[in-house]
Image 1 (cartoon, rainbow, N blue to C red):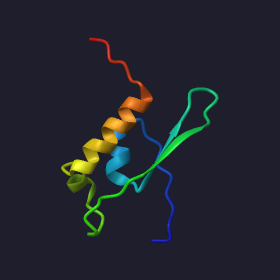
Image 2 (cartoon, helix red, strand yellow):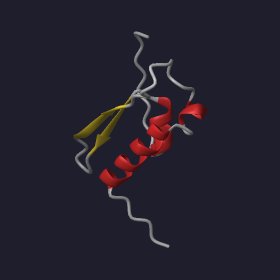
Image 3 (spheres, rainbow, N blue to C red):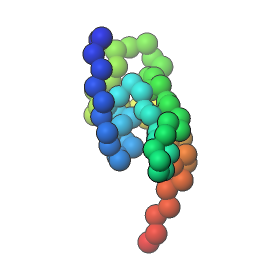
Length: 75
C-alpha cells in the first residue's frame, strides 16, 4: 500500500490480473479515454494474478475492455 507502479502493456489479461486500475488511452494523440477500477467483490484480500484469472470479475472486465478497444481479429 502507498506505492504506485505504472505498468504499460498491450495484454488486457495482464492489466486486469496485476493491477487495481486500468487506464485506456485513445489512438494518436494518446489521451485518457477511460479508467476502470478493478475490484473483486468478496471483501477478501486481492487475489494473486494467477487466482484473478479464474474469478468471474476477470471475465467481466476483460469483455468490457475488449469491447471498448473494438479489436478486430482477422483470420
